[in-house]
Length: 543
Image (tube, rainbow, N blue to C red; front, side, top):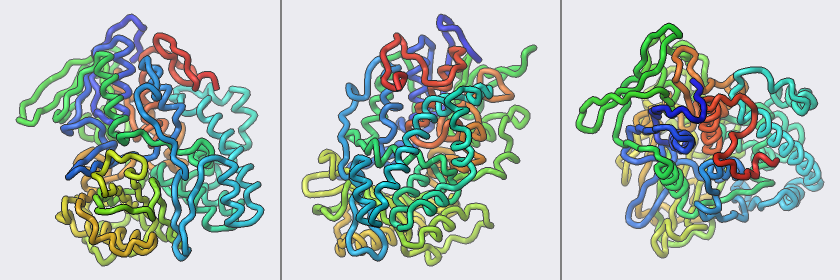
């Protein structure tokens, strides 16, 4: 459905995560009557939060990348990221721990300093990294201009001269894996890991991700990593505040049961939603436009009848849910100078790690904690390194992510060790690994607050397909125009936003998906970001 600017639509949005809030704000600012519904008791979706005894944690996104995309959303809302958030540039961007290495390596901010680091790992390789990052920046700029803000409703993007000039490079980038390219260009396995790990941010592995995602290295090595003071909870709060100020309403503890439709001469049309509150009372909310900003599998297969599904159950048999995750929020007594803000622990045989986390399609087995790997590649965030407000004096807040297969049957997490056996065992192994590799032998005994989450938490709390932690993996078959679109092909007035659809995984991508909805409602079909209203200048549009 599209609408002229002066038309006022009643809009129901399912899901108050980043994409739902972003869509709500944009449509409300355009003058529409918008209400957002979420089954949780707080907004944010996967970008969640948790607090206990003065320790505060983000339980979702933690890397602030693609700042121009984020700032553009704020400018569409009539403000800026600088005005709404206090951003800190991290230097080093992150710290790496390599299995068997006597000391960690800090990855600095800036291309020149990153090249110098590569020269220490393999003399002479810094020049090759400079070339690699130059190519990555070009790929990123091309993606921003022609792909990320395009819903691919036509093939017009292929006719742009800039795209045509890059066709050979783009075909090469799509036809090879990220791991294959990095292995070909860099001999040192540590360099390959630094350049390949961003694939995890895309819900896949460097062995499955197309080499096109070389562009991710432009983001962390060249642009650098930022952090919003107060964590991503402050980011979500800013989005919710601006959306409400624009006129949107947010209803939490509201579980949507059905997307309502009506047949007509032009086809079936969305007419609203049916939802239940915590007391079990059923409500109806009439709407001219419904935006599903939740997990696409749930939206289609739980909320629509089979005949109206663009993506029926059989289509999902061929899809990759991406990895699951074991998560831990750990409040630690005493300082941890051994860790930086962002920390990556790389096992030497990480191909084995990725083979393990990709094992989501084999027959389900009885959970066996003894079968878990004792050592794997993990991520640890110590936000208290940059934000003293997230931990009490003398303490540190750690967030630990252990990628896993997407297996909800492995259970949910809990507080103080009362989660499922598989979840608690995986976190115990991670704590032991961090302690050994970072040289913190008493780490386990200093943990005073502990909460864990497992794949079943993602399934229960966010209706994540098969407990996937991030969304559909960015494999070649699930990227760009191969990824599910933002409009239902069976129901008029039903749009989709979020990590399950174009352009993909990650908070900035979710903001772009909201802009794709906005452009479709406005009737805009051009590539590129939406025009701000009332037409504020945008740094992104000037690129």
